[in-house]
Image (cartoon, rainbow, N blue to C red; front, side):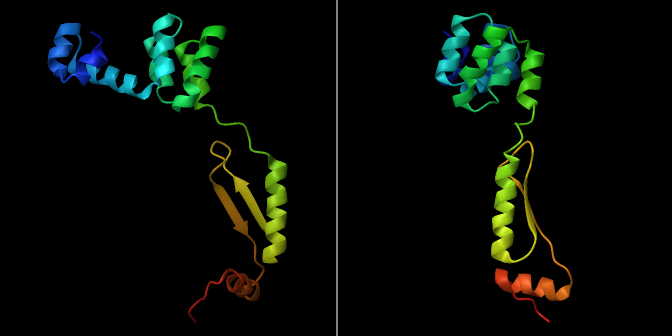
Length: 152
């Protein structure tokens, strides 16, 4: 019986640890990794020895829909676990700068003030919008356009 199946059937982690000659925390760790791997990824791990438990631990941190594609890279290119860790931690490719420049320009025209939109390099869904003002009258005009009322 596989370790994860035994845990799912309600076996105690301590008893399983004794049976598999591991510590209870190791048993729980293996089960956590197994639960975070997609079914196709589990199948691939069973079919090949090119994807080690170390690789599986790192792959389990990825979204399930990306795991098999990355595992195929591991197999095809012979990636080490350390290389895979660096690959997973690497920042995403920079966002399309021209798109954000055009978006900034469009927003600036609609607001009527210089504005810049900058996505974060490693998480493009996050970023900053910087709105420039030149003096208190400019600031008050921006607040008015945005529907922000300031108490005097």
